[in-house]
Length: 298
Image (cartoon, rainbow, N blue to C red; front, side):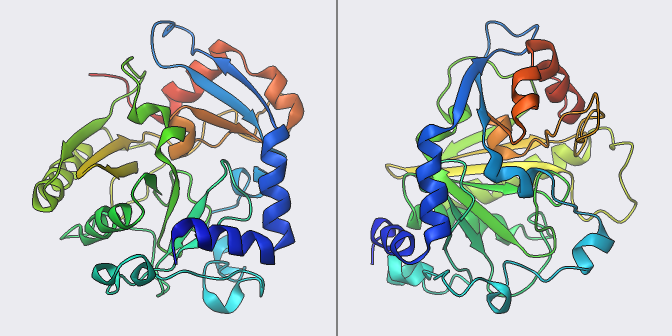
């Protein structure tokens, strides 16, 4: 089965997913440049009410422990089906993941790719083999951009390891020739071993950055978002180190905005679930969102 066939089959079986995909074609969006970076990469604000549950997710330990894990097989809706990587090619049959259609998409063709086993959201372990999995999965899903949101960098399921995938063309940061207003580490290669070595170096660099003020002593990896795509025999990957999970104006009370940047937001599409907040975002607010949650260019 191809990825496209799987996607179409899932939408035919699950009204919630198909309705939310259809709704994407009527979402409001507008372009915006962050103040002080008028010559840099253009961002797009997307008013997407269906993403409120992700943007507003409570990811503290108590809240996570109090809910069933929605990425485990036993807790998924009965309509949700899964595709194994091996169905995209025998060489990927050893990858211990399942490919799912995300029922609350940001773009058409939005997938969630959880590990079969319930393991924490940590990509930068001693050998960085989860990044190796990311490389191979991106090859199996060629043309898609896979991304990883760290446990305190936009992941709404910090208790269950997963990637997400969207069309590479949707991630402006992968193709822009303009500068971005924050620090990134990037690399391109057709060699798997080179990519693994680069990622280990990028993680080491991220560890040298100032520790976020709200960091716990036992955080297992530097805070970061990771993006990877495979096209025409070449991998391209980016690491975005994070200085904070959310801006100080995050919330739904008066004077606050429900903005919680993750990989997609920092790649050029800022998700705004609340209509009034969508209207309130100015170039200055966008610049503050970026400067509070990422490290400045060095």
